[in-house]
Image 1 (spheres, rainbow, N blue to C red):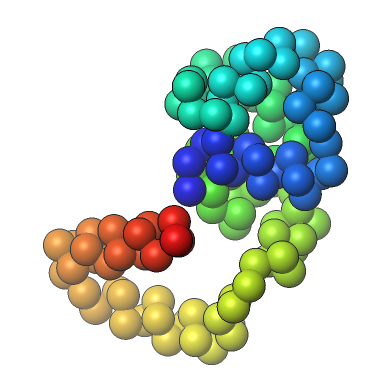
Image 2: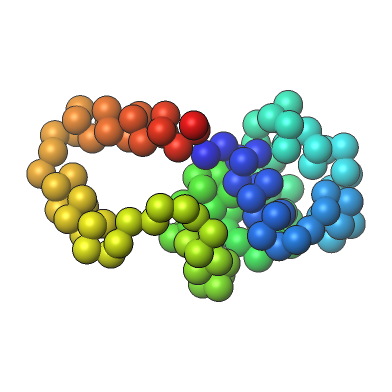
Length: 120
């Protein structure tokens, strides 16, 4: 997912409005709106850090969408609970074992497929 999508998701889960985030971070509402609309794809490091701190997530989560990189375990759990069709732990273990046996080119193809499916 993109920075904009991850930011929207974190705002929703935190039940925060853009103006509240702007107030907490001292970043203009207009700038945050630009991040959310995709007009600015990524913030500079300083703004990224401020946003991550205000939302109590890691910068890595905001950039990659990987909730396992979130610094807040409760946030990660909340994301997991809100996701639909989350595979069982055994399924994930089996998938990871299968992925470890693939060639890099096959892994790249699978990553692209997953990204495409996630965007639907």
